[in-house]
Every structure is written in C-alpha cells, then in structure tokens.
Amino acid sequence: MSLQQILNTASKPTSPSPRRRASPQPPPPKLTRRAAAASTLAIAAAPALLPAPLSRAEEEAVEPAPSAVASAAPPGPCVAELPVTAKAFLDVSIGGEPAGRITVGLFVDAAPFATARFRSLVTGVGYRRKEFVKIVPGYVQHGGVVSYPAVPAVTDRLAAEGDALRARCGGGGGGVHGAAGAVSIVVRDPGLPPPKPKLVAKGGKLEVEEEQVGVVPNGTEFVITTKEAPELDASAVLLRRVLDGMDVVEKIAAVPTVKDNGGSPYFRVAKLIGDKRAVVAERGFNRPYTKILVTNCGMLN
Image (tube, rainbow, N blue to C red; front, top):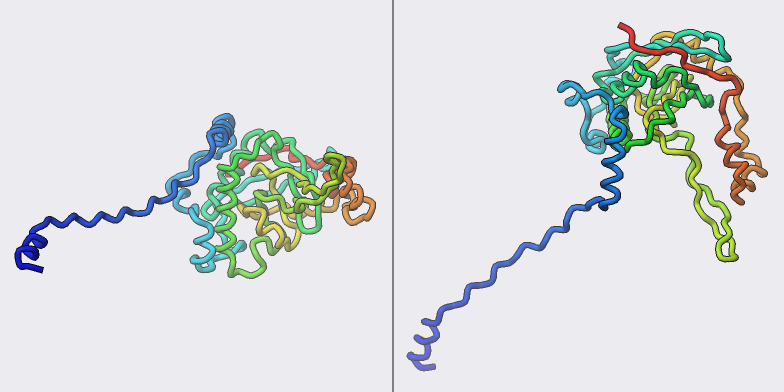
C-alpha cells in the first residue's frame, strides 16, 4: 500500500460504535381491569371491615415481611411472656342458661392489627348474639360474623402478622398454640380439607373433578384452645390468652356435638359421586347440639 493510501485511510472519520442498549425489563404484573375494579369495590363497599387506624407505635410493631422475619429474626419471648396491655370479656350462655364470663388479655404490642380488628368486633354488634359453631379435641371455634365478606386486604395482613408472631415465638417450645387458653383469629380454615375428587358426567362420559369443601375465612372467626393444638399455628393468628374463665371454656368443650362421620365408607362413596346430602352432612360435623351464644361482650378498663 502506498503512503498516500495509508494517509487517506487514516484521515477517514471512524463511525462511533453503537451504544449497547439495556435489555428491557419485563413490566410488573398488573391486575386485569375487572379484578382491580372488583378489589376496589369490595374494600370501598365495606369500610367497617377494616379496623381503626393504628398509631405510629402500632404501625412500627407490625412486621412488613413475614418471610424475612422467619429467616432473620431471633426467637423472642413466647406466648406466656407476651405482655397483656388490654382486656376484653365474653359473656356466654349454653342452651339459654348463663354459663359465665371469659376474660381475655390482648397482646396489643405483639399483634396490633389483629387486636384492633378484634376490638372493633367485640365493642360493636359483631360478636354479640353470635354462636360457637365447632367443638373439636383441642379447641372450640366461634362462628364470627358470617355477613362480612372475605377482604384480601384484611386477611392477608392478619396472616402476615400471624407468621411474624409465630417466628417470634419459634424458640419457646410447643408452638404458639402449645397450651390451653390461647385465643386466635382464624385466617386459614384449620378444618378445611384439601380438594376432593368427585365424578361428574360430561358429554356422556364420567370425569373426575376437584371439589373444595367449605368457605374461605373472613377474619372474624376465633378459636380458644382447650389443650395443645399445634394444627392451629399455620391457620390462626394469636392475639390474646384467657386470663379468667377457662371453666367456661371447658363447659363449652363438654357440649355434645354431631359426630364426625367422614371416615365411613358410605360417606366417602357419597362424596365421590357428588351426593349433595354428603356435603350438607359434612358441614354439620362437630357442631354442638345445644346453642352456645356470646350474650354480651366488650372491653374492660
């Protein structure tokens, strides 16, 4: 190559190297317009379902990320050592006769959102004249307020608070519901069985479909343990313990109930073929024969 050709080549402007563009990030998942509207309407239509606004101290006490708490927070004081900062009462009748009063202590510092929700139900007309609907070995369950819809904004936060408290009590031994007298709001139905198969006729053929029995808890039902009940640890958020009136809880637990006949081969076959009578019968299992009511309730000074 001649000297002139080399000089001509060197004098040509070099084209700038193209800038590397950052790979586009996938857009965050969005709710469909219908789902977003339904969620907004559910919360707007039922403002009474949300408890009263929390104070700054209560907001700071709520753990924002239960998964992080479970992996990072060291075990702290467990149920017997949690400070009781407020008291509530439940007057109970069995078969129309007064059975006594249950006094419970609230863990406002440890479970501020759950206790605020319970306070709003116990001081209004929420729990008054409502029934205990289930008696099983280990705990008794109050039916709550069935007219309240299940609002995810409420139940998800209750579940998060329950997970945080379970992580805090993880080192105490026996779990959160490791003894009698624990009182908790149900956020996941402990008695809700997994979906069961049933035969359905479609297009002239029999097909097997999954059927979910029961309804999702709405965050108003509560349970009182009569002994160790570890199955509740993953389904209920602890917010208080019985200070006085365990004898009343024992009276409730002693009421005869409808026998759970779920293990019967006849019942299993009826469930498998989709017999509606089996579904109705299952809803009545462990239900007391005698009406057990909260006749009066409220907060104590």
